[in-house]
Length: 190
Image (cartoon, rainbow, N blue to C red; front, side):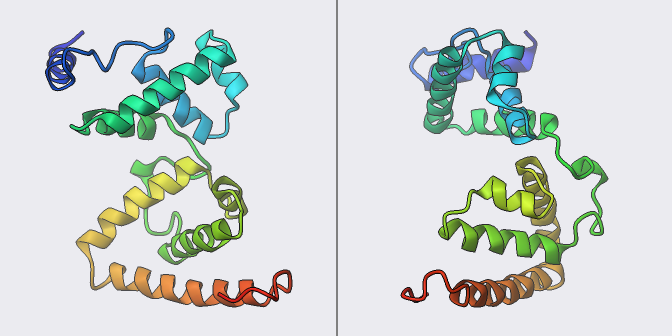
């Protein structure tokens, strides 16, 4: 099991009143569940996932619901960190792996537009994954871009941070105008 997993398990059992939060659910371990979600975000279907796990849809649904509840109720955030690590290590998208990113992989201005498009088009009822597809991205790509640019912006708030903020404001104005002038809801004001 390894010393770190043993410590992690013991720590969580103390915090959670003796309950082993990493005990498999419906035969699906936390690691397998996190990997499955990364594969879903990378474009695989639920049917492909359950086949690879050797479970049926009702078992997957029950396990997924329980793992989501455990993640939500984790007061220590260690499940969240473990999930993020597994998800980001497994998820694949249309962009190169995050470790190979540079600012030219997906320019910050384009990342700003995607962010604004998801905000505005989401309010119009568009699904986030559908909007990402418009930009040639998967959920995994967007997650990796967010992680990459958050660090870059933090390290350069007056440089890259200002560039990002200016792009956000520019694209918000653009999308507000598009939505106001689309002719489908002339009776609504934004």
